[in-house]
Length: 230
Ligand SMILES: [Zn+2]
Image: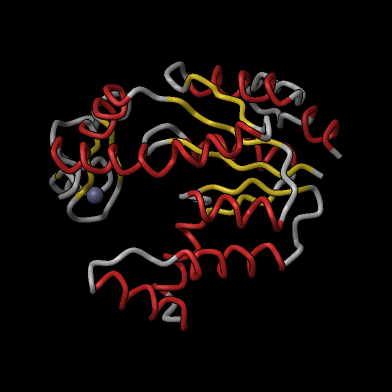
């Protein structure tokens, strides 16, 4: 059984690395943001609560977030463990988490603010079909136009330098104390998230003492890690 928390600023590849680990080690990937989005889209009671809070321009309370996490983990569909992403976001949530669950490691994907800005400001979105692009490594074949539908590419409204600076400040203010709490328990492995994702993933596995990710051979499923994990 492996229980991990993954932390990192937006653009650090948190979701990607969580998925890669989840696939190879049969972990359940719990993305707290996705759970909230699902609830909103499916008009659940929690979804209605979240909608009200957001309409009032407020943040979802710790109680609500903790309740959602508790309920998700009570599902016990994680025979081999879980990797949780988007939680805990502040000191109180971290204390709650440590009191309720024992964890094996906290993966901290480290990315300098300047690199976050470079990545986030290069993001584009199709105004028609919603497809995501990055002008850094995933540009459309014709400038400013969606490959899938020909729609115009735009930036998200909150992907401006000013808005990002506010988000980064907020992120560090809340996250640094969380990392400090986990560091005191010696759970944290910090990995530089600037290299290509395969390299970052190998570094994560090495630091956690997991078997390395097998190099992808075309037409063949990487099985080694899975077999070793079970
Ligand atoms: Zn499109």
